[in-house]
Length: 237
Ligand SMILES: *Cc1c(COP(=O)(O)O)cnc(C)c1O
Image (tube, rainbow, N blue to C red; front, side, top):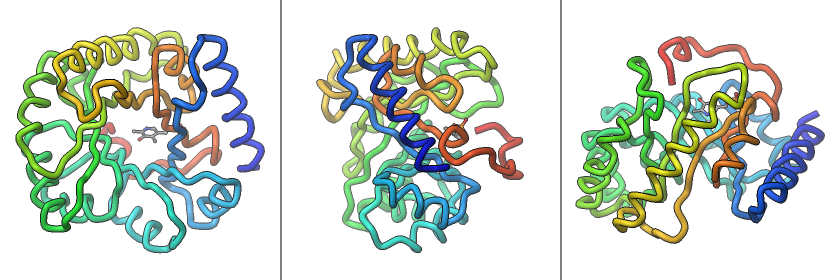
């Protein structure tokens, strides 16, 4: 089933990209494996998937240590600066940096680990009170501050729009993230201003996200099937 789902998702990604004039190879699939066990992750690895996303540190650390294969792990959950050491240690890309405090904590530990840590800055494009992410109008300042750190590489931006059952309703938020990234890249605020990563789109709306410029889509349910909600999910990602 995971194999069929993966094939189906890649077919959709390729078709959607071609239909909107994009190169399908610019789009990476983060397989969101929260709530899934090492057997399911192993099945996806057997199908060639090498990029996974996890939300909860404790759950992730057990799984990450289990695999010796070369896998890239993205942290996509809510970040806490008191857990920055483990986050910097376990993950290749941290997608949810949204404050200077968290960035500085990650930088400090990346430095002590002798590691250049890739990050995305999470933007609260919907300006939802309960949601993580820096406000769009405060993003430039945060990027300028993070630029002062030594071991963080800002690859791009990430967003989780407000939830709608109709994926078309996510479109304005994806457009807003793309516009913001274009503006900030004109000011040379990313590591590679010609190739900015935009992480947007989940199971329900990744096609719309691709049409609006996503380079990273984060897909869980459409790949692994339904999961039992984590207690922390209620707090809003
Ligand atoms: C859980 C999660 C996803 C995947 O959601 P699905 O709807 O299952 O595809 C993507 N991004 C983040 C930040 C998540 O927490």
